[in-house]
Image (cartoon, rainbow, N blue to C red; front, side, top):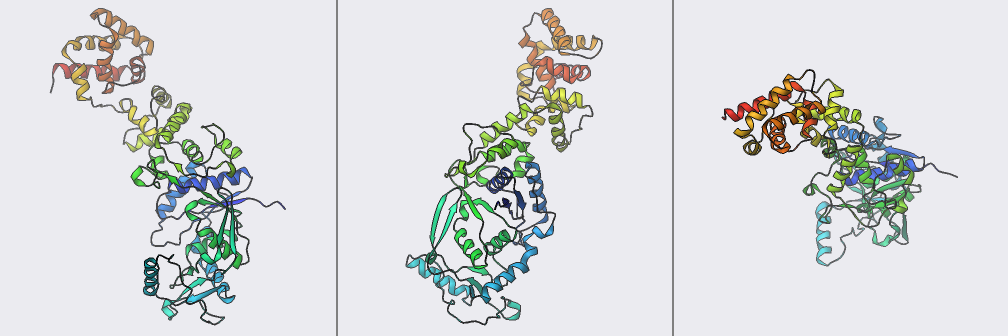
Length: 483
């Protein structure tokens, strides 16, 4: 019987989406889509103190931006873990009644003393099962401090045999049950722990494949045994090697931006982020650049590496540069507008003009933010001239040629073009016996404020006659009347 593949991504809304976590979610998404299956978004919000509505909204926005659309999940409230607490409590009671779990009365102080003793004796600090043999009533209730039921509930791990994990990335892993401790599944305040709630939610949601980082490997045999105890067959597992920083340590803020939102707000494209994350631990021959459809078509766990992926911001930037260069100008114009607005600059109402401006810069910028920065001299009426550039190029001897060029441009009928600008330049160069660079650089400084820009004729054609003439005249005035 063919079973529909169902994968899930289950972020906690306690902060921004981390690159490493969303990479696991992406692989789950690609595997589901590759197999014509379903991708489920579940919100693991049991950390009530740290979970926020703002984090949730940011995470949902990030996933939509990435194009990781889900088949089931928010806004449906049933996919929030906190709305399933009663289901988790019922399952814990079932395990108690069937003697597959037991109450533990050991205090935090006792457990801490046992842990320290084990460390002194260089033993693994596992629970010694002190309370496992204590008899308890079959109808025993869950812990409730308010009503004097101050105990935790521990899972009774099988004392012999082994748990086998046929991992889709790491291969077969075998765990001796005798080495796995009787871990807590319900705290003394009555709240289920994450590992218990998570596997129960997975089997209830009919998840067939769990894709996650290999830091979860120690949880896997425990979750599998809980599933068996509850009468379920656990899903298949695919544990991905962690994402590391360039120095080989787990990727963290000290390596720079590590969240999806940081890259989204820095003007990266979702296609670049998807492409980069997919290649972070997966490959398809020597191909580097993939469309989303290609990723879905080619993806499989057999091509996932077993060693950790190293996050390389420069490689991501290179990919983004590629996508920016290939972007259709109308689309680029639409995408750049929010970043112009963020600067507090007026958004040009003429899309054709903005396309013309962007066309001169889009092979230079690597992100949308950088594109806006480069376009600032087009978008702002009053530009700031770099002092060093002014000192080097706006010298007294260039004032007269600059004035002549401004007058000649203003005297021409109609708007300026690259061709007409070139003709005016050539006439002024001949008149003053100058080489192009001797005039072009001072003009560039006068028009853009700096020494680097697109071709000077392109700049003049985009700025237009009025702004070009005004800026050159302002430069002449600056030369003749220095502050």
